[in-house]
Amino acid sequence: MRIAVTSQNFRTITGHAGKTRRFIILECDGSQPAVEVERLDLPAQMSLHDYHGDDHPLFTKALDAVITQSAGQGFVARMARQGIAVHATSATDPTTAAQDLAAGRPLPAAAAHTDDHSPTRVTLD
Image (cartoon, rainbow, N blue to C red; front, side, top):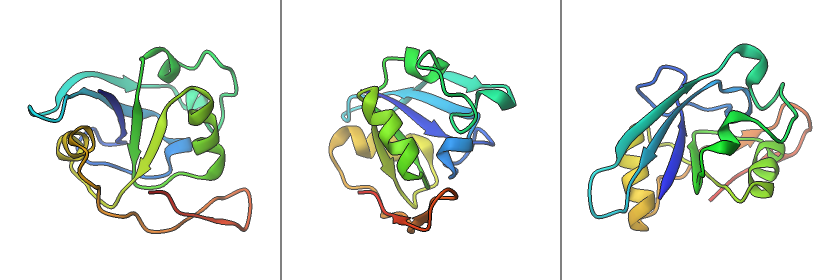
């Protein structure tokens, strides 16, 4: 499984997935520890909130999932169009969260996220 984790500091899982420019890309099968294979450190104009093309660098990574602490409906829908599942969690360790997801273990629930563009609250499994 190939998983991107939102991580503005490259150490912990962070939120606001649409505005995130830094991602840790991990590969794992659930039986072995997750392995970091790449880091994306994108320029400001390449956050998914600001970049609207279908050729975003995140879409070229053959991802199965994104793990984040929060994401709005637009981010979730955009990832779904690319075949990428979004998992919001309160977990903070990227490697452990990726390994748990790949093994089919539930991630700790995330707090509800209020999308900046609408008054609707979004919660993700």
